[in-house]
Length: 193
Image (tube, rainbow, N blue to C red):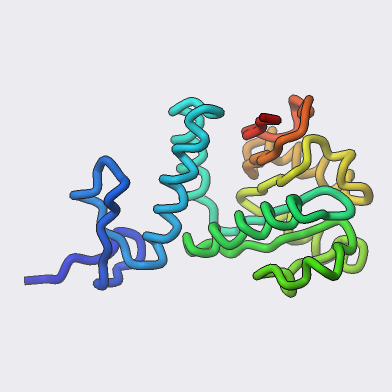
């Protein structure tokens, strides 16, 4: 008899998701479970913001993506950096290669955040950051409702917007500010409440 294995990684040390309606059929290894559990909890929060179709599309875009990038606004503060690094950590638990790009320096008191040492600063490494953003299959835009809020990165974000309109990348906004720019991202998860 062959031991059951994770549907994503093939590992045999499995966990059943008790929060998922299909938990009797869902068997995942610990890393996939962490990412799945986060998505289940995130789904409960986003039910009020996204339709079931939008949530299903987001899940499929995440599943399809190999290279992921996350960006936030200029002069990143705690909510910009925290949300960006949290989404990057989530993407990594799902086995994605994920890089955080910020426009410029962030406060020293935020250096403790997990993932902070790996952040690519656009003002110091523009060529590297441009390459990362051009190659991303999925681009998360965190705590930012318009490209103008990423001073210095407007042209590369305009290029990403063009690529997303052509279907070459998928852009997701996760934000809480009023009046998000309508054509900025393919999917806008935006709630000021």
